Image 1: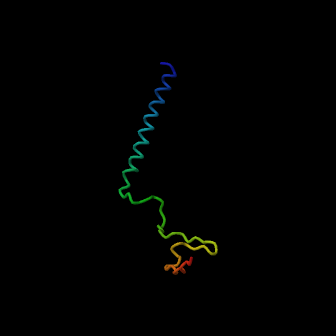
Image 2: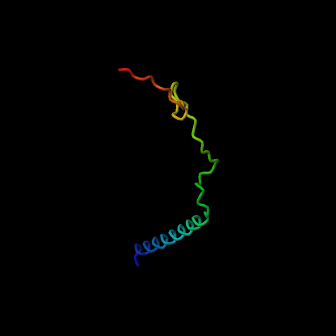
Image 3: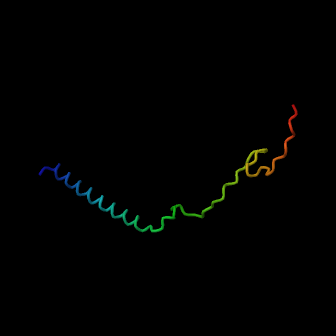
Length: 76
């Protein structure tokens, strides 16, 4: 056999072995996680919206007045 054929066979065998090890290692990691509620980011969950500093005179719609003042009738 030529050296090219031997090199191709060895590369093919190394490729198959590498794919086998990668497949077995990832399969075991995927099987460990039984609880799918975890996002994996860790830390404390904080669901409160951030407090944003608005410019003077600007208010959030939720902080606005609750009652509308009655408007004067328009005379024509």
